[in-house]
Length: 407
Image (cartoon, rainbow, N blue to C red):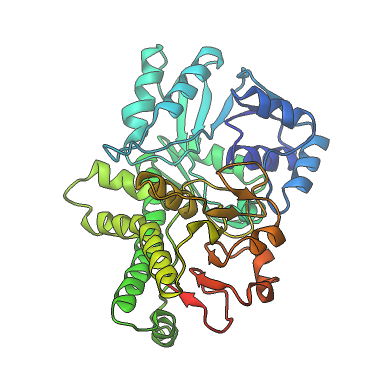
């Protein structure tokens, strides 16, 4: 039996995938409301294919509990935020989960950490927790790091088809965990040591962050000298070895916007390009606010209450708002005491998350003179004609109406 600890965006689909493929699974989370919702037969977030996977897992016997189980295999998928002051990983959630596991696990159990951590985190924060409780690592307890590699909006497909990395102290344990993940994973599964697995995951997301930063910096350069960044990127990408990304309003989610900071915090003075990329991407919400201000001036607009922000999630067609550029913009406006009555709408965010939030597209468009497109949901792509006559700032390069403003 596997006890999956942490039933959020990573832990829940992982638990469901194992169960749907015939593995006995108990999912554990400290959040009573979340567990109760799952027990009632409902997933706790929206994701393409998740309902079907959930139903299959329930049919195969998955159980949900507030309590840790006594078993020989644990998968820990709890949050790993970063400390905004030190830029270092906050491993407290992982450490606490391991402590709780140590209270109930039998000798010989394997603890797999899926949570993304900075290189050396398991050595620094997890091994001491195990050893302080009298367990001998490699004999009484086996430690493994198997970082997730999926993206909201395509989780179910990527869980099955993406390659995986298994970091273990011994090849034997690594192969044992590899065999477990092979129950559903059709991608290549690489076995390596723990520190390499830690570093590999952080490097993957840092690579993406740096490439996004290059596109965003190009947008700023081109804006400063009245050049069309999208046309420049389109032409440059015709070179067979060039693939510049599309600029945007910032970087959100819990991977690309967080993981590079782990390297900045752990390797100050060495992570110079990484730090510069983080600063560029973190500056984009303020850059968009400046664009809004200048476009309002150009169009004789003085009432921020007639401006609407379309999109609260960090990417299209998901309900995940973690680190979203829109929320960063609203926070920046609040810091500068200029929040006003700016309006916000997102079809995927049904709960009231921010002030002046709309839950109906028609009402939202009716009540604003300027629309800022911050997320490229399919919904707005299908209703572009309704933006005719509005001032439109398109930060996602999805609107091709006459007179649209861009980054």
